[in-house]
Length: 476
Picture 1 (cartoon, rainbow, N blue to C red):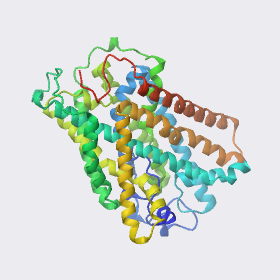
Picture 2 (cartoon, rainbow, N blue to C red):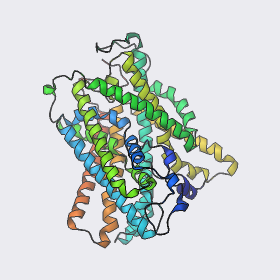
Picture 3 (spheres, rainbow, N blue to C red):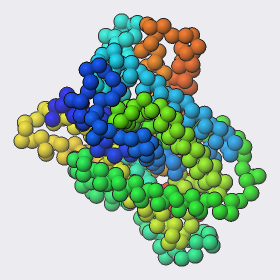
Picture 4 (cartoon, one colour):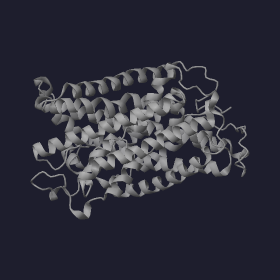
């Protein structure tokens, strides 16, 4: 399969989404109107506003949500929710910028659809700088690079998440009861290091990613969505009960831990790659801005509520995933297992994006009868690479913060404001808009640098915290 054919048929920036891959916006391009209107698909292949809202919600809710209580701890019980609100507002503003620029180039170039990478490339071609125009093709490559890093980073998070939760369930099996009201500490039966659990999952995930058909993957997407929804309902049902006195919790955490908060928060909000496919798929795309704002408002409220309630419920004992703090009774052990099942199947969906960017590069260089062998070999190597990286960085909180700081901040905060400047500067922009875009990009870059540094520093020289967050060790 050539790279050009891939661009035209399959890949359109799912980014961090769990959105079902059968919603690829590439279908039905022949129905595009020559006038370049936003409605580019036939009625039979379009989605209603409600379906689009559901896809937006499920595409932004993943493992990042479960790490937000620890993120709130790293920012403070007051600073945490305020910062989540600000990051949510900035993130949805950047999504709006991307949609606006994409519309601009669809009209200007009379194209049926432009994805994230195309939009950045065309934005650089519109730049007043001749150097940027001559190197515009690097815009797509930069977006592809950060998409690959982000998606494979999510896959690393999934390895750690699966190992942590299964390890805890197995080690607590002897002390697991039917009494969920007596939340006493369970003495865990040592089994094996969580790195060995990762290796145990490795062959099963390799077999899972051998499923290359998007329609088949949609079945796994549905199963993942159902199990994760049930788990979230049960999780909320527990954390709203008997919340301890929050007077001992700090309003503002030490500044040194705030960069870790930033990485986790932007990891959770990094769903910008899904907005163009969803907008392009709508039956009435003029309503998409309203759907985007309503959906992101619901998501932000969910993030803030779970982050705050989780931290209030567990305090300083909160771990990298809130599921690891649940009582050792069979009801809440099943929550861990259900969410883990959802994450297991979601791995294939997150893996699809980097695979469809990387694999054609290798397949196009071998004879046709070797294409399948090379395809499966590259898939196996990519899964093994995510497993090795997860083994090297087995702390769930640090993996999430590192991925968020390194790549999610670039896709969600740094690139979109710069894209707006390059797109509209030659057509005239107000100084206030330029200053706003520059400020967002600078703040995103500062978060990128400081968050990456703090995550790596904590990994190399972990602080002596009173609670062992490193999930590879035994729980106290």
